[in-house]
Image (cartoon, rainbow, N blue to C red; front, top):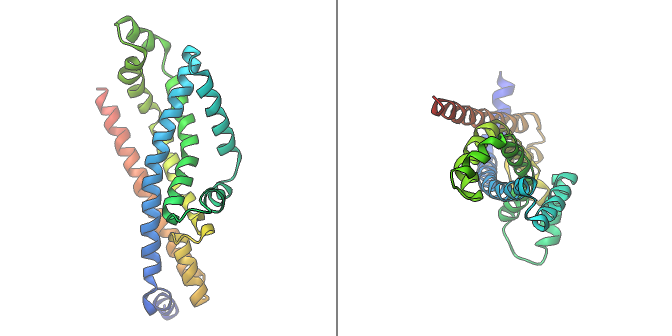
Amino acid sequence: MDNIVRSFYQNFIEDNRYQYILDGLKNTLIITFFAVILGTIIGFLIGAIRSTYEKTGKLKFLNAICHIYLAVIRGTPMVLQLLITYFVIFASVNVSKIVVSIIAFGINSGAYVAEIIRSGIMSIDNGQFEAGRSLGFSYNQTMILFIFPQAIKNILPALGNEFIVLLKETSVSGYIAMQDLTKGADIIRSQTYSAFMPLIMAALIYLILVLVLDQFVKYFERKMRNSDH
C-alpha cells in the first residue's frame, strides 16, 4: 500500500504532474467534440449525395468525388492522415495543433459516418419515399420529413459507436506533439520512469468517458423508441 501511495504522489502530486493529465484531457475533449461535429456534417452531406445517386441516378459527378474521398480515407491509416495534414497540408501555415487534429479526425470520421448514413437511408422501404412523393412533397422535402427521421433511429447505435471510436482514436494526436490525454500520461512516464500509474490513469479516464458516452447514446435510443408509441 505504501508503494502505491508513494507512486501516486510521485506521478501526480509531485511537481503538480497531474496538470499534464488535466491539460491532456481538456485537449482530448475539445478535439473529440469538434471533430464529431465536423465529421457529422461531412457524413450527412456525402451520405445524402450517395443515396440520392443510388435512388435517382442524379449527382453522378459529385458521387464519383465522394467515392474517391471514401476510398482514400478508409484505405489509409488515421496516423498517416494526421501526419499528412500537419506536416504536408499545413506545413507552411501557422495553425494550432488542436485545429489540425480536429480537421484530420473530422475528415476521417466523416467517411465512416457517411457510409452509416447512406446505409440507414437505403434501409428505409421505398414505399415510404413513394408515399411522400405521392402527397406532393419534393424529393428534398420527402428526404427531410420522412426518410431522415426514420434513418436516424436505425443508425443511432452505429453512430454512437463511431463517436466512441473517434474518442479513442484521438490518442494518436501525440504523433504531432499534441498534448492529448495519452501524451500527457506519457510525459509523466518520461519524467518519473514509472509507466504503470500514469498509463493506467489515462486508460481509466478513457474507459469512463466511453461509458458515459455509451449511456448518452442509450438514453437517446430510449427517447426515440418512446416517441414511436
